[in-house]
Length: 132
Image (cartoon, helix red, strand yellow):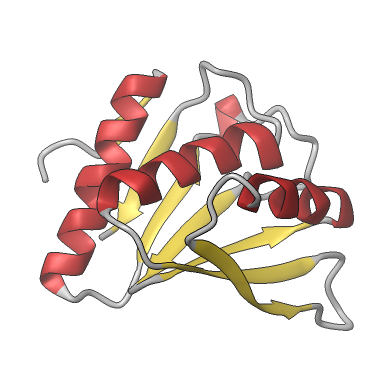
């Protein structure tokens, strides 16, 4: 991979798909996508939204409202399903683990839609692939 950030939908989709393919080809531990702090309009706290791909699992943290939106989004991705929800006592949210047995392009589409629809980011948000 030669690029690690993108700020338009088509660039982000290509970036996420390339990163997912590289993650799988390398059998790396994790692929992490972070939102540029300047693009974070979610008021979700000090840390902007992030999503990780770990093999065939997508991992993300959600508030209760975001979790409801995630469940709605999964209705459009029948090959994806929530495998685990963990709500630590000391945290104000839920860590969701979604099994994503699909190709890199479909995973990329899900990540893009999750950032936009689950977290409510604007269409011009900038994302960084910070680990592959």
